[in-house]
Length: 295
Image 1 (cartoon, rainbow, N blue to C red):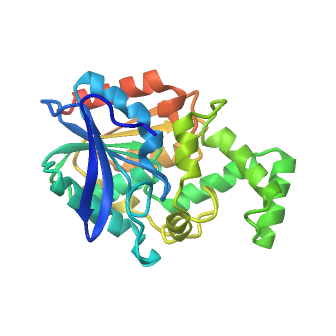
Image 2 (image 1 turned 180 degrees about the vertical axis):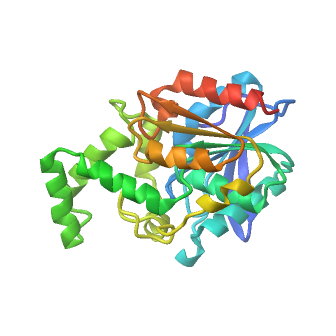
């Protein structure tokens, strides 16, 4: 998926004893590099393909698969699958690739990771983009429970029935989950091949350890993560984007925007969780204009 083409490079970096896969698109230039953080936790970088559009605007784009994901090594113990470890892996990766200053763009969990990185290592950042990201997992969970309550009665009943049994793999339950995803994860029909690939190749050890059995059942070690009260410490410019029908709802994005001192909020009215696919041209134009204003 998304194989390197002209002016592209790929390789593996040794980070804390593991090999992490990375890929750059575009040549280094005065506009600098945008580092992409995929979500999950546990997905692959492939669904972030639309961000290669930034190459035409003069940016180099760096994708990578986080520890335990995609083409990167799996951890020897699931105890290593934590937010703090992903932060330090990212820091070591950009150092190994000699990136001293860069833009950071995180999707979903990647948005949470971008915020965590900005709190821990603000020095190399030019800006951050939270693409349907979150800073308060309990708030995001409450919002997804609200979205579940608005599903058609048969779907709600199927979800409740199997959740009560703890049977998250029953075909009827998985069908109800797909209905939620069609409304709040990606509203395109069919889904982009790259998105399907990333979901089909999600690392279950990492996803189950950090998140849970699905997007709206967060039982893993991120379930209590909340840094809203620390967002004021982030002083780099920030763009917060969200879809109108997003599983990480506009209320979550508005909370981030309200607490980030130098931030902008853009809501994509025809989109859910993957606005960069659902409204690709407008989305990439918004991101490009934001980056151009913060060279």
